Amino acid sequence: MQVHAQASDEADPAVAELIAARPHLSMHPMDGLVLEDVPLNAVADALGTPVWVYGAGTMRRRLAELTSALSDLPIHIHYAVKANDHLAVLKIFAAGGAGADVVSEGEFARARHAGIAARDIVFSGVGKTVAELRLALAQGVGQINVESAAELAMISEVARALGRTAPVALRINPDVDAGTHAKITTGKAENKFGIPYAEAAALYAHAASLPGIEPVGIALHIGSQILSFAPYRAAYARAADLVRDLRAGGQRVARVDCGGGLGIGYRDDSGASPIAFAGALRGAFAGLDVELMVEPGRWLVGPAGLLLSTVVLTKADEKFVVIDAAMNDLVRPAMYDAWHAIVPLSAGNAVGAARPVDVVGPVCESGDTFANARLLPALAAGDRVAILDAGAYGAVMSSTYNARPLAPIALVDGSRWAVIRPRQSISDLWAMERVPDFLPG
Ligand SMILES: *Cc1c(COP(=O)(O)O)cnc(C)c1O
Image (tube, rainbow, N blue to C red; front, top):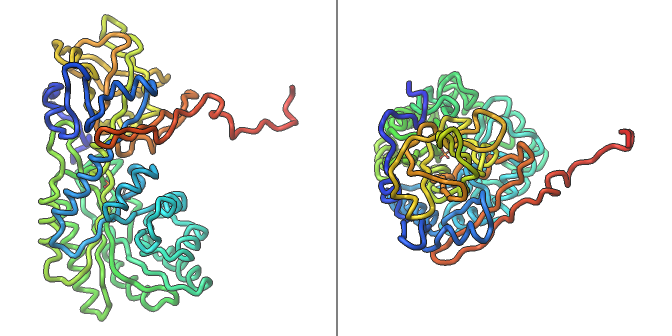
């Protein structure tokens, strides 16, 4: 099994190759790195660093590319909100025709607030509470993906009390190894997710007999940052077999929710191809007469986001480049050993001779490291860099560890840009805190 999602012995790609593989980025001799049509130095000058920048046109283009690849299938795309839950991002995908896949009351409310109809929302997650189920059902949620017999009983009770019928899909654990990082594999039997394959048919029949429950189909989601289609094909073949078995047993199965997980090329342009994804779906489900759903998150937003940062200083004979962004901003390198491209913002810096450096943040943890022995042109205090492909599982996973305020977010759309979240102020850090009277002084 591949342990590190992105680890590789290959030489680091050069700055020019990294930019050439990303159509939304370009390097201009005077303006430096440009996202869509906005020079990123302009954003950093206005907002300071660290700062997130998202490309609206890039998100729209990726959704259109995926939609077009899947266009001959009876399919609906539900954007996985957890990858990037900003209201502006949700509005962009909703305008492009996507529904939402949510995993909490907060995500459900965000999707609704962004204008997504409840019927276009799928509620996923292994531990939905009664309060969450009540809210989703009262508003008319499109589908609830059920992960256990216990949850099915909870939904039946809540739906009955509300006088509603819950459209549910049973999330099956197909026991397939997605071949990705252990922390983002979800479809193996030992993972906490889903209903064991062998128990699915009996539970489906039981669901059909419960008051307040309408089983509409099955769901699966085998992991994230998947770059090989063999696991998808294996999981979808098992799902198609289950649909046939259920129907042979007299059950109605209208839908298969095929989950998300499409990987992106963090090092190069080797991300999962939507055409190949469509092929895997077609191969398993063509002729089965089921509606399909997919729930991509990372693939739609990952490449569209960058984290800009400034070099604070270099130390130990320039072995360490200390930048003003940290693991509290972008935790993926610390949490998943993720490889993120780092490129200078100025064209002059981008062409220097490359040498290996460790790019680290200022947080008091050795894990606060963005890159080890990364081949980068010389950087000095005050130079700016962009950490690429940070649009998914980036700002949503930020914390204020070390009392570092949340970084601002800017949205670029062609040649326009706007602040979509200002920098958190220092006093905001304790605005929610209360010190009880019984403490001295
Ligand atoms: C996280 C998740 C997704 C999205 O995964 P990506 O790898 O970002 O595409 C989709 N469906 C479910 C159930 C998830 O938990």
